[in-house]
Structure formats: C-alpha cells, structure tokens
Image (cartoon, rainbow, N blue to C red; front, top):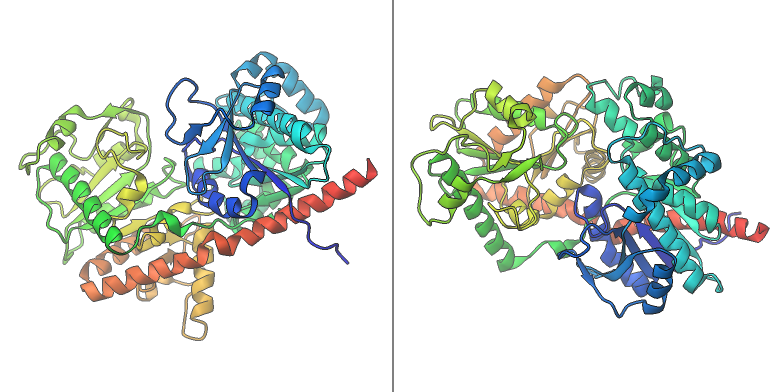
Length: 571
C-alpha cells in the first residue's frame, strides 16, 4: 500500500515568465499564485530572470528588507539576486537573478550537463544559451537558499521547473541537492510545436514519429535534448493536458506522471457595475481605434470578434481565422457589422504616429489612414504572415466590406502607445473570441475569454477544448450532447457558450466554415439569447478555478516527494 500522501513544507518554482510577461505560462503562474500563497505564505519562492536591472519593472517590487542575510551570502557566492514581491494577486515572494555572468562558464556548464545527464548542447542556437544560463542560475539560487535556510531541518522541499528553458536548473538541483524533490512541467513539447509549425501532419502520424530523429531533421536537437533528458531524470514529470501527454509519450519517450490542468482565478474578473463600466469602456476604445484607422463609423451593436496569443500563424489558427473573416464578408444577410481584431505580438517598430495623432483628438473621422488594418509599424512588414494574407485577400477595410480586420501586433501591457491598457481590459469588450488552434496543449486564451463572459470558438486539438467538451458532455448526458469526434456543425452553434470545432490535420476548410457559421448565427441573436449564452460561458469558467484544479499539483508534489524521501533514506 502506498504511503500517506506527502505534502511539501517549502516550494521553489522557476520559469522564464516569473515577473516577465511573455505568454500563457505567465497566466498559469500568476493566476495560481494566490491559491498557493493562501496555503504556503512565505514558504513559497518564485525565481525568474532579471531583465529589468536598473529599470522599473511594473511586475516586480523590490524589497531590500527581505531575506537580507541570505542575499548577502548569495552575492558572496556570485549570485546577483534581487528579492521582492511579484505584483500579482497574492503578492508572492520572488527572486530575480542576473544570469549574464554565467555566460563566461557556458562551455563548462554544458560539459557537466552532457557528462551527468547526456544533454546535447552542441547544436544550440537562438535563445537556447540565454534560457540555459538563466536555468542554471536558478538552480544555483535554489541550492544556495536551501543550504542557508532549509538543509538542517526536516523540511519537505519541492522545486518545480517550467518548460525546456528551466531544464538545466532542474537537473542541477537533482544532482547537487538530492534532498529536494524535482518536478518538470512541459507546457508544450518543443519538437511537437516544431513539427506542427513546419506544416507537417502531427496527429495522424504521431505514433510514427521518432522525437530524436525529428529534432535532427528540424534543427531542434539542443532544445529537444534538454527537454527529453529533464523529463527522464526528474522525480515527477508533468504536462498540462491529455493531448500533450500523448505527445510526450511519443516524442519524449516518457509518459507524464501527472497532468496539471490549467485553471484561472476569478479575482481577475470584475463584477456588477464595475464589469458593465469596463466592458463599455473597452468597446468604446476598440471602436474608436477602428474609426481612426478606417474613417468609418461603427454603431453600438457592432460585433467585436478577436483572436490572440502567441504569433504562431498555423499553430494558433491565425491562418484559418483570417480565412473565416474573408468568407464571412461574402455572406449575404449578415445582420451586424463585424470588427475582427488579431492581437498577437510581432516585430513592432512602435505605434503608428498618424494613428496616435488621430486618437488624441476626440472626433469621428470620415477618411481612412493608409494601411487601415494595422495599429503599429512593423520592422519587416513585407514578410509578415498576417499582412501578406490580408493582401492576398485584397482586404483593406473598404466601406463596402462588412467585416473589418485590424491587426494589433503588440503586447497589450498598458504601454503600447495606441490602446495603453491591459489585455484583460480589452478582452472584456469582445462579443466573441476565436481560437481555432491546430497545436494548443492547453489553451489559456479561451479560458480567459469565458471567464470574462465572452463566448468563444476553439477546437478539439486544444486541451481546453477537450476539457470543455468533457464537462459539457457530463452535464448534458442523455440529452444528445456532442463529443469531440462528432460533427459539431450539425447542431446549434455556441448555444452553451463554448463551441469546440472538430479539427484534424486536414479539415482546414470545414473549420473555417464552422467559424463563419458561428459568427453569422451569433450576429442574428436577440439580446436575451446573447445574455444567456454569455452567462453560460462564464458559468463554465467557474469549473476551472484554481480551487478545483490545485489538487493536481498536490498529486505531483506527492509523487516527487515520495521519491525524494526514498532517496534521502538511502543517503
């Protein structure tokens, strides 16, 4: 019989996105932090990269009164750390580490990783070195902190590392501090993402792919190696959905020990009058930008549709979203004008000055700007996938086009120069969101969408989509509910707040048509039906709160600690 479940007394957690907002992992960590803080208070420490040294970081508040004895010791050991609070709900303690000094020892660090764990860094390029030096530095921080505060006690300590960028540090801790239980979480395998992004069919042939062989073919050997070796040598290997668990088994040759489903925190969503006011403000801002760009007026009932996330043109379904907007524009009988926003960060050169000048004036414009579909200048606009697709469709947001498309190629961090507000403060203004992902291990953007009462369209190739289908099937069992493999286009679209379109390697056109039908139908609904569907969307999100999903993390802690306890007994 298995021993009683072990819970940690101290948790370290590291990620490239601690106090560094880049993508979906930031949402995972920042929304979950409050739930962990409630259980662990100051027995929880996040570790992130110090990109903001000497500059103001809005996500981090340094506090030089915290952990002073250890900070002095760490700095004497060559660790340039800053301690403070992560500026998110729960305000957990965070350590930021300057990893640049470790570049001088890079070859020795990689040599040790090869001899200890077979990590092949020989073919590294791009962001591999930067991420690895941070990861190594984070491991050193854990070692230093543990030796200073925890090693003489009976503490049960866990170190959780997220994504391949933290693998090197997890292996360092595994070797140098074996009393610590190590957990490695891959949110998406690097080689799976690469296969999908290189237009190779991932799902029909997943069973036939060899991860090592594909890494060599796609020039992904270094990232794949650190990810694979970390997965094999930590105490507990985890991922975020059943979709990715299959991928890990086939491409990393290890089935995850646990699936850590991603949740959300309701504190991020306003309620009552505050919700209504913020939604109104968001819609006014979105339509003001649309008017300033196109020179056309938009009535209050304009249907605002958006997609967002990482700029992976095929993987995130941006290609099929644009295709659907093009087809929607040709649909006769569309009852409301549509403005579709594509909010994905690209290589921006800054906000458009002509647009800024227009927005500074509180007037309604009747003439368009050049490139009336773009809010920011791009450094390489000739090779941008979104812009080239719009050109291919001859999409210029002319007056006769019922569907306008606006590309917002920046991080919505309140300082973008056009909207100057956060992503959530724009999301709340949407009527619909579309995330037609081809490769989506979980799918934080659709979860955020429904949390803000915005119905969404996603696919059966996303972890969230499969979870939503499972919840809906359970609730509607015996009432003709749909499953992920059925033809979702044969029934009423979006009636329960989330539409999960069946997607495969080859049904691009069917997905585009499903999106068109969903938006077309939604545009014809009366306010009462819309309100009901928005309520159902939000109700579904309440089943994904962290208070429901945090238990999966405790399962992972137990798996890792059981192994660490056995290892400690043998020491």
